[in-house]
Length: 205
Image: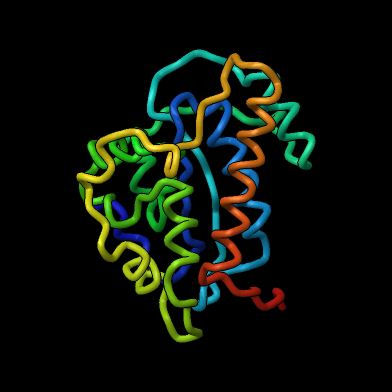
């Protein structure tokens, strides 16, 4: 069953970030989320592994504008290699949470596996919902928090693009568009992490 390992209990939780070509938005979000979640876990003490992928098959390399804008906030993308999402990646790397850069990417993910809908959100939607609900309690599981987060969601609301949910693609555009993207992604992640169910993990013995 795809995603069934989310409740297996032993290893780290898995978060997958998705954009189009996996050369601009999702690598930035991946590295920023990984940095923000380093050393923290959910209430059960499990940490996070954050990866990324793209919905399309492209041979494009990293955009220098994104590399430069990411470097300005301390994110090194020199070793990033793009890859295309498939059902296997979705089921393993996105077992606990899938974060997309636009509604279109969300639709692509759910088309790949309709069962991924409850754990798939756009980044901006996820941050918006996280700050709009009651703060997680110490005895609330990540799955319970995620279910609360998704209450009232309608798949039909995701059929059209909306700047409230979509992070624009800066690929091939002037430097300021890359800087704006990095800022937008960073702000959404800061909101999400501040409002989410993440707690410091105990030090290793």
